[in-house]
Length: 360
Image (tube, rainbow, N blue to C red; front, side, top):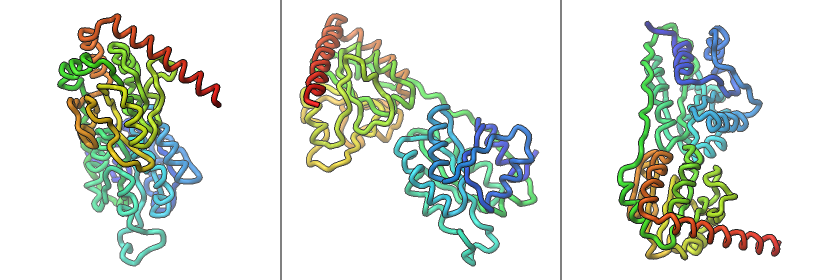
């Protein structure tokens, strides 16, 4: 059985687990708001006075719930106001589905007030864009948008919705939701364990994927299993490893020469869930020191070997992959060796912090 476009829209939002709509509406959103107010058990509308705050609230809500958040913006001006939040969400890989109401298609060629190239505005700040021109296409595009927003690398997806399309007196079919596949451990963990187990001076770079995928505890197990010193990725925005842990050596600076210097004393590095490396200031040369063995693990296949060669590249969900890697490392690294490395690292890092505090 079909639904009117605006009601089909709400039906899909509920089915995707959306319980809040973050928005700042205008005239082009009126058909959607009318359907929202007439629907029982509709998602709560969270009104923001500026689109920058609206997108930021949705970003935080998506991170807190682990589900895609939904954002409703108003036409070209509202979308432009929300771009900074969308750029941040894309960098932080936050799953968002974002719509903006376009002007009525019947007079769009006459340049009506506040109309604009919505897709052109949104494209640099989002993963994908959809220009909906037929009511029958809306349900399928929404289903795709929610799926794309969660697929690695996660991020915001944008849809342009003409005002008159949502008000059409027609029925559209709502496709059933397909649950996203549950990712499992990476293949190739045996070889990764051999490389890390053979290291005399192992290190780990903890990327923001660790925090996003709730894999911190698994990374702690992996680090302790081989006694690897752990650095946060440059300019991290998640807690990816406990800062009070003896193996924690701080955040890498956002310059290739400084990263190269920080990693120069290690012979093997495991880079986990990091868009490695994202420099802020230019410096010549590669980020990794010559001769270092690189094991790279990520849930996004495009990250493997993207900016540097990896001796072992692994693609899979981070938490189960790291838990399995920790088990394999315990077979490769004697327990007394791992514990001695943890103890030495703790003493070294404590001394370094005390020196820094004295200098300050």
